Amino acid sequence: MKIKFYGTRGSIPVCDTGFQEFGGNTTCLQVTFENDQILILDAGSGIRNLGKDLIQNGHEQFEDIFIAFTHFHWDHIQGFPFFAPAFDPRRHFTITALGKNREIQNLKEIFENQMEWVYFPVALDNMGATFKFHHPESETLQLNSATITAKLHEHPGQAYSYRIEENDKILVFSTDVEHSNGIDERIIKVAQDADILIHDAQYTDEELVNRKGWGHSSWQQAVEVAERANVKYLILTHHDPEHNDEFLTKVEKEAQAHFPNCHFAREREEIIL
Ligand SMILES: [Zn+2]
Ligand SMILES: [Zn+2]
Image (cartoon, rainbow, N blue to C red):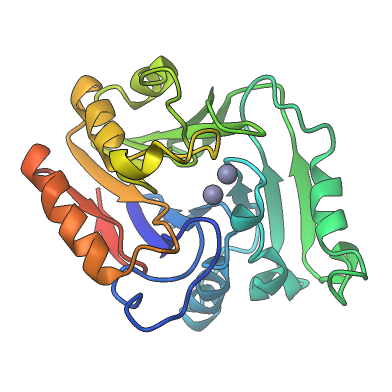
């Protein structure tokens, strides 16, 4: 399994100087399986570069590219209208939101509304590619040799963690997580024994005091989750738009002093698991 970060920023993209190392695009992750098939997690502004790379690299997967969503806050869908492969009539995408008890009723409507003519000139149905909307009342999906499971965690408007297992390797993606009454025990369960846990770390503990109800974690909470869930390696993401490279480098060192096997995600970094 390979992971590539195309978006590591939370809330809104930033392109200012001082934001180039950790990156300015919002959440988007590419997972590549052993048969070279890919899974895309979330469609923040980073999906634009992901799409450009797929085309440039001549990626030959035209059937059933899955785009799975943790949730539908703006910073997790805003890149979708700029995802070039979605304009290619040869391509077939399956858009999915795995997990039980999702409160959204109509998955297609979310993207149709996002691309209504008041907001965007091209309608979803006119993009070109074919889209299937897969909204199961199930939390597990088998994609060839990979098993993907989604579990609800605490976040305003609901968000789900994804646990992805292939060949005895475990990747867990838990972004947009609030631990309002101590650590959300559901995250400990879903992250148990992961080789890599990617966890929300938008704030520091000090900042979090004035950000209650905003739906995010501190890096200290992410470290606590990693320790309690016996995670081998922790990657912190969903960086606050106010946190520049200098700040993130400083807190990364603090986090590593507590949990050496960790770092803050950098846009375009690739990890082989
Ligand atoms: Zn977010
Ligand atoms: Zn969110």
